[in-house]
Image (cartoon, rainbow, N blue to C red; front, side):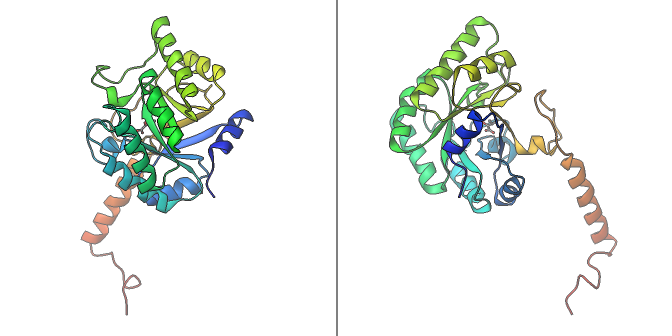
Length: 265
Ligand code: KIV
């Protein structure tokens, strides 16, 4: 039995922090489950992490369904949220309702996540009404990278903070069971969490949110590129994996792998 929205809300109400991490395949899903992490996000960050693209824009509904199905086969306890990718809900609510239902139906995930504030309210109402739980996403919304002229902290200054705050109220009122808040000043994240009863899951939003999410490969230190200020690396797997692969390469080339014990007789 997987964690439910009611259990996530209970944790928030009890002051128990909620952990969430992105995952894109069955092997890591089983490890995330073994670690006791509450929520998995099949983020459209798979465009960066899995597909090697510079942003999330080219990710398709089919990509999300494929990776979410892989994740669902690898775990049964975490609450699993799949991203609605760029282009699947921006044109009209009908597109969004169809895409949301298709993602849930074909992947078996428990909820979808979409980026945007007040403009998404009518779609969120229709999805929730149709039986698709929705997680909001405010602050740095990577699908709008070109509008934002890059990846920057959002909600700085009174006007931007008030807009984001009002967007968060609108998303909660529309029926979101939770909201991801990405790259905003911690005071603004606290203001949002204090005003709302639903759990806010922060990424670069400080410690006052009900929970935290990170991209798995960032948290495990698998990326060799520049690290954002908010990322903590809980392991240095890039080094560990490269060292292991170097040793494998060496052993193959010097003939010490496979040994007699590693051979069938
Ligand atoms: O796509 C993603 O991984 C996300 C997280 C950064 C929250 O949306």
